[in-house]
Length: 511
Ligand code: ME8
Image (cartoon, rainbow, N blue to C red; front, side):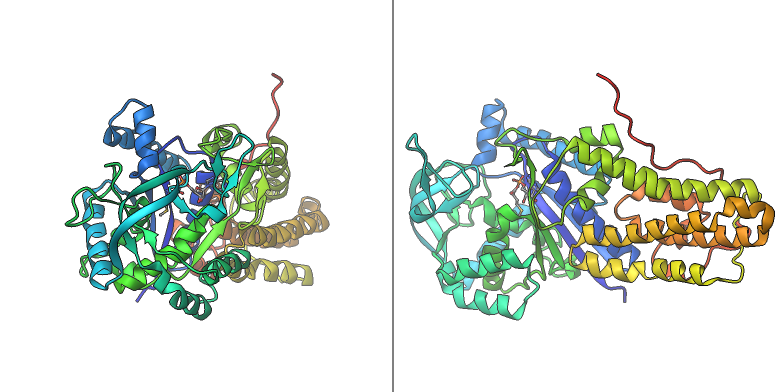
């Protein structure tokens, strides 16, 4: 049976328009989903929007709209962003959907039946911007006297009746769980943070609110709506058809990997496995966390208003150049800056020069000197074997990197081969062989075409549209573009379409 693979993005708050930070996590998850599909897995890739809670209620009120009308509008923007970024999601979940309300009510009932929920009174600090509760000890006081959370979000004092989740009882079981699952949280720095947070002791968690209405009602508890994070986290299970054990997608749970940003690790790595274990459901296998894209040293966020728009970048540079830049420019787990200059350099050096020119030189020589047909291999030289071996090693190297979300590292491996292929073409000089040794010229061009095919194949998850163009030009049939198909060569003599540049150089226009 085909192995299943379930990958998710965060579901984004609909309190404002999407920006490059959201685009980034979604593109990274998309790379993983596409990679797994090419590697023969049956993939389920989920994204969507988080639509309840005080923050969204407030944003709707600020916009002068009823919350449902507001969330309909903003959710559509996130879906449009995913489509325009070529994010290949299989399902787009909205937490205001009926299926999700049914699923949350059942999750609640199961946790309650296990004895992990009790009614009490919450009194303490709450940050609407983070939709999170904070202890007094975590707060700092600004010079103007306002108290803020470690994230910088202002907090307010909340006092209301509330249901609690007995999180304090889960400390040892969570620590045992992290111990038994060393790959559950990545990267290691985040894992250490989570473990020391849990070791520090856990308070019971307030999981219902009574002071506003925009949430999923708690079963049999008039006046209470579920804490937005309980509702939000459960989206991953809802999308698999919970609570119907016969749902076609139920077999995808537990998730193989949740992609998130480092701001929401505590929710995914502490609360989420505790809720699931309490409900008697399997826990996800991995939570992988990305670092921040920063602008002028500050995290970009809707609330701070210093955002870069990924779609505007895509209009200037082309979508695939932006996807490549985001995956290549910084390690996934680390923070990094976005700049126009760095974007130009990746576009012109890595894409237009290194890869684009290699493809263009090879394909135009085939068009001109081989009657536009893919030549056959000749007797191989040592140089041919070395280059071909490096290319053939790429799927396995890439698999290791992508499994651990080391995307930038995987791309560097591909670029080593591209650089080696550029050195090879310069050294072999097939343009000069045309007169002196046309048989060798054809053999050299075939080696290059084969190397480009491997490169184009492994880069498809990163740059789907451009690599489809490259593979078209190399005569690779549609059904022969996954990793397994690399074992069978493209037929000698295949007629190739007229070559066309894949990556235009970016030229700054004078303002
Ligand atoms: O937290 N750099 O939604 P959200 C990199 N609804 N990634 C960034 C980023 C930046 N500057 N800014 C945002 C929520 N992100 C909840 C999630 S999941 C059950 C509920 C990305 O709209 C990053 O992945 O605030 C971060 O975790 C996510 O957007 C937060 O999106």
